[in-house]
Length: 194
Image (tube, rainbow, N blue to C red; front, top):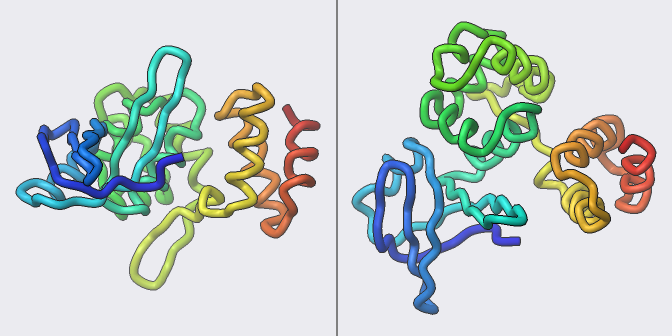
């Protein structure tokens, strides 16, 4: 799994960046407008990566901050929200603004984003509202994705042939109930839910 890519910006558009690494390999990453505005005009960049691997495609998504990547991962964990839709959402509402919209239950604001209907907006709010916590100055999404046990359990379930989104949903519930659960126990619990 690729965590981040550091290199020289070979080409840049508002939706994609091509980053050439020291080995001479260039990676094309889909990006949000927020990431574009942060890296525009910079020679050397570091982008946090989310890989989307399917039978017919291997797509990389790049983010200027780990927080933006976690927001993206939380969004694609919602049923009916794909990677392209998540990029559009993060390009329309950035960081704290998106967290505030979700925590306040502002369906109207989410519906204003291209491609987001009432049902999808409501689903995003219902699925993510409980994951949003208020800090002193900022809002952030608590993510189980930074937990190595979660990552290992998710990888094992995917190797066993289970759907990623369903596995993530099951593991999120398991780790929310018991954040210190061991990998083996988490896999067993998830197998009984899938």
